Image 1 (cartoon, rainbow, N blue to C red):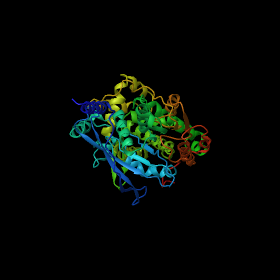
Image 2: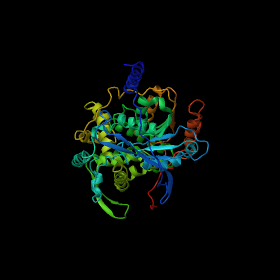
Image 3: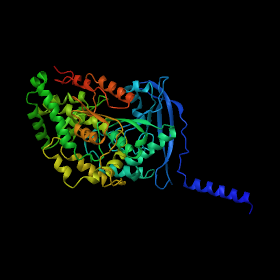
Image 4: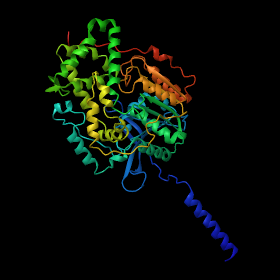
Length: 494
């Protein structure tokens, strides 16, 4: 063998050894194309960029079924563009990031002046192999006022979805690893994350695995990985409801109109505990329907009204009317929330996440005790536990429920009367997010709709993202935020 041949063989051997041991790189790129998406008003269109990214459903074996993740990018509008985009993670679990995109883009349009806005549907949602379930019969109004998870429909949904999905592979951790693949394929080294509700849990999980790529985070309504939905819904709802009633009694006009609102709350509950009431409601199409309203659905309506201050301002009135025997407003609210909120999104995704990450960790009897002596009660836990017994349970890391520790700058926003992610969650998260600032928004719920002066919040988010730090961030403007005026009568009444 000649010296030249020996040298060549040695070089080839070294090259092969390097290729075998070199870290695997992502070679898939994303070709974004100009497209149009719906705007925030009827008929309006937004010119943006659209694309998709393919991942293996089973990230461990990297074999078998693949999923296309839907992507929408709202390009920065200014010339002085920065390389780190704002990346949105929605609530749910089950909401679609790309469907929320126009509304989020409108809210953070000042941030968009210098940064791209990125929206990717997490696997199981929107345009990314959605796990959609038909749980209610649109031709039967009463079906919307029965169980939260009708078991026959849950079983049918599972069977249908299993034709195109392994329901155990749609957990938050897997979804966030997908997101990091998309980040790299889009060419972003650093990103800023904004999440609301379940989206904050997704942000925290992303931080655990990919912190080095995160510049800053905004968490609106913190859902920690040990929240164990829906275990604590009853007492958090009770706290928020009592807070709103206290504000009513502190308001002269509301107190004058409903001086006994606390007693009326108890009277409504006592009436419904005796059995459902029959109510005639008017639907959006003008048709009327005779339905029965149970304690569970009435309490659920109150809980969802607490999500937004504008709706919460009607709670004293609705309780007062129901205490006098008029359950129409409360039943109508229950129907609309079931039809337009609960029945939307990917409910199969909700089950895949919560049946793996929440329900298994709830100790027997623990959640039921939380519902005692509360307006909401334990119905949601009972029904969700029964649904999870029919669902395929995925695996989560052994340390999944531990707090997320990070020094990435974080702005945490919580509504004072949030019935699902209350301030205590934000306070706890802030202890482990060492460069964070927790802002409790007065009179706020899970959202801030109806409050006066919330431009302050938008300006605060812009200042935070621009600076990339909470140091020196002025949060004092929240003290000027005002609650909506309490409703004292129904529309059209004298």
